[in-house]
Image (spheres, rainbow, N blue to C red):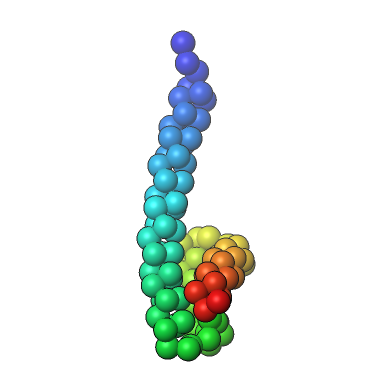
Length: 95
């Protein structure tokens, strides 16, 4: 017989697993678009990085995080990580 705590734990873990899958597929979709942007930038000799847009996006994500009751500093760190990965991809397209 499964205890109540074990049932609750199982339910939470199943939700976490579904959310992890959503995150992975969402990131994959995001990177499809950023790859297309990288190709476009390379074709038109645009720089791989756009600091003004990056700053705006970080502020926007921090605001969304605040409204979602998520630590805005965590959101900033996460987006900075994603942005750095995107810039690396854009630099590869330009090479």
